[in-house]
Length: 323
Image 1 (cartoon, rainbow, N blue to C red):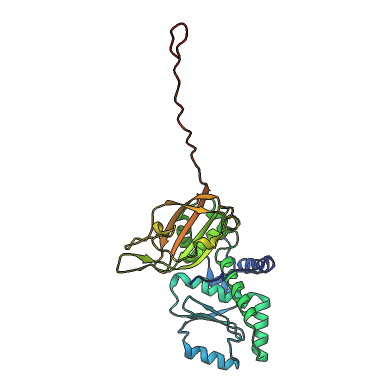
Image 2 (image 1 turned 45 degrees about the vertical axis):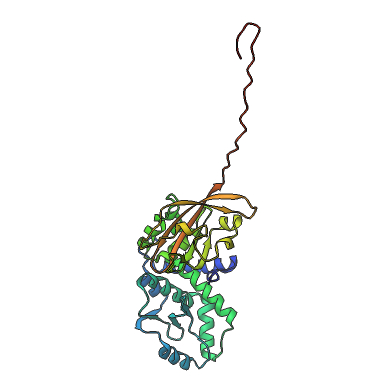
């Protein structure tokens, strides 16, 4: 099932989050240091991290009882695809609790997501107030705060525009976000997402669930999310790629199968919003948790016009020369 965009903000909301993320990066002395020094950023936000807990139902119940509320009052959670709680921000003592089983590549993003809840003034102040007066947030506000925390995590982890400067100095290719993920200390998923969102090229990344192979030799891979560049969104309707990937899907030949981790670059044809056909280049990478399919527009499809062959007529001039 396709998931909604978990980082969509208005321009005003985005600018506000970016301003506070930049301030925290500067206070932590983190700009230009790689891997991004997450521990220093958390310390600059005056947050204490506790990462030896299993965030199970029992622990969550104790937090909820302490808050004396029916929802996660003062506890903003980041949920995975399985709705597993990975992190909790406790505003009263400025504590961040992280599930001890968080996969290593995801840990920096989860830490900085919780830091967003603790550092963004309108969030930390409101949660502290709610914590004290025993009220709850409405679902729309909670959802907005989650999206803001996701964007805050991305802005701090990828150090604002610095990532784009490094990424787009290189030719567009699958290997670029793969290499930068290692340099920055981020997961492949978050790096591919940032790579596309900041990209001047017309491109997108299709995030797929792991492939399910069937006994008859066929396969299916459900689309989890599609992240597009601004230029891609202006030209294409990404909905054409949202259906599950099976043998007849345009991206089917780009899916790594049979224990392969990467696919070779190949071409496909996509139709734009004006019903014009474009040649696109596709590459993909299986992270073992999801498949990341990178699509780049290579321009309008070039068509060859074949003129009918004209049969030349022979004539003989008076001088006897054949022409």
